[in-house]
Amino acid sequence: PLAKIVISEVQTETDISANEEFVEITNISAEDINLDGWVIQYRSATGTSWQDKAELNGMMYVGGSIVVSTQGYNVDNSTFFWSAASGQLAATGGNIRLLGPNMLIAEDTLAWGTGLFGEGEPIAKASKGSTLHRKSIDNKFVDTNINSADFIEDQPDPINLNIAPDPPAEGITDPDPGAETPPVDQPTDPTTNPTETPPDTQQSEIPTTTDE
Image (cartoon, rainbow, N blue to C red; front, side, top):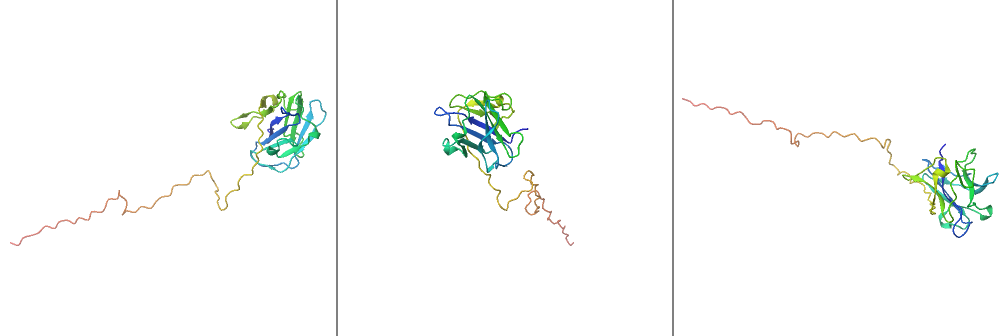
């Protein structure tokens, strides 16, 4: 099944440090989603189990993106953080997944490099300082469930923007916004209608007679 929330960008290291990492997720569905109980998990390339990397919470609104970073990195552009002590995202290969509460199947999974537990063929590892970025067509993320087809290497561009939609204006309701308003017949005023022909008020001429 297609995911409602996808992993949209991942950085496993920067030019400065292997501890500077982030994961960006995006809500591509048409509904707001409660993230209470959701987790991002990591599994090394040869690991035998998944480990919680970050716990999520709160609402994720339609079209919203959330960035989860290493503690102390990307501070002004992240919503959640994980501790560097929890382990690194190995640059040479690994796996991450997004898991909701009571989910038997992950919402989305990504494997790169030597990782084996993603969706289809893994995407090649990114160069140092670059990121793995989900492809988009017409501003919509590609999600074929094949990591090598869905991701490309790109420059870091984390987007941490998750804004609640504006509430509808009070007192304004439109039961059917797609319906057209029918035309209203205007009353006709014969005194102002230029096409109205006035009645013939000319009197018939009465012939005169002469007494003889």
